[in-house]
Length: 215
Image (cartoon, rainbow, N blue to C red; front, side, top):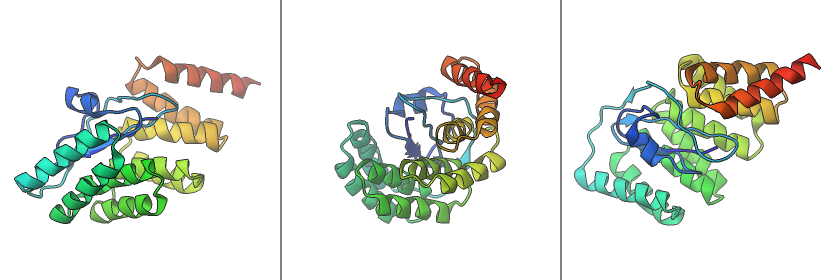
């Protein structure tokens, strides 16, 4: 499922701003407050959320411009160039989680798993309960086969932010496709579907799992 890039602005993944930032394989997070991200089995996604994670740290205009340029590079899937700029942004802001989350995503896309994990860990050191950081690191762990570690991260985010639907959907996918935990998958899918009744794909997944329970 798609991952977003982290912003320093309010997160509401159904907003026009974030919708414009969602890419098939990138989670974009912007500046000033944290955003959230999504992931699914294929394509890209937008879930309805009202999560706002505030990080009240000023950002120099030149740093902000580099960050915006990095977003453009990520949109164009120019990950290596984006990594260079994001590292400059991270060095210029120090205590903002957004560039580190996006670095984690970019490093994942380039197969630099150790750097990806380190970047997500830096983001969580700054903001231990950042829903986007937890969600994205869960996606990362799932991608490298660390399914139980991914589960722990998803449990953290849904317990702290039960209304954060991207994590609900990703947690459901983890339980469904990788852990063979039907009850867990149904719980997460149904919570997501209640908040996003227009998502027909998840409704199909729910129906399929219910059939499994009957057999």
